Length: 252
Image (cartoon, rainbow, N blue to C red; front, side, top):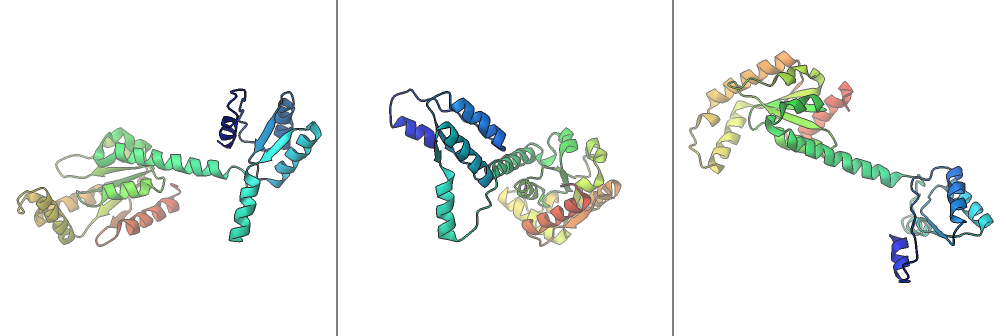
């Protein structure tokens, strides 16, 4: 971007800007400068490795090529103001880019396989959350997706058999979610109000909730997966517990 902005100041249209990324050896520098020496060139660089910077300056001096250090003055200025020592490690920005794209990929995965959609995605998930309605499956999925975990979640209802794919996944990649029935009763009652439905609907009925919970525990037992009680827990607290389980099992 600096090179393009500079070239635009001359308005000649005669400049070719050639990017040479991922320089990691003196051999690459020698090869690149040999090509640059065939033309009238200015070499702008963002090398941070002291060894590579020296190799560039030595070879450019030998070939009489003008060089412009873009990163060096910035690093020195920030070091002087902050008092911190730079890592001087190449490629850190690319690592940050990879983290970003992994996070985006995980978020897209969580949306695609939310609430039991596309059960074949269960086999590709790094984590599957199971639970009856309103046990925080979706918020947990999205929170963990921001931690770069590919999460699918499946709602459990006595009237609907769980997908067969669920029983093909290693149990250590599945986490069951339970909640105290009276707490769930309050949550569902509020949900009914928002939806403008009668407060006595079976959805918030304690007997119905207990039935659903027993069914969910039966499924958890068949799978042999760990179970977390989300009653009175913040999403972050539950998510951290899930991450601990994943790390222990070697899932991440």
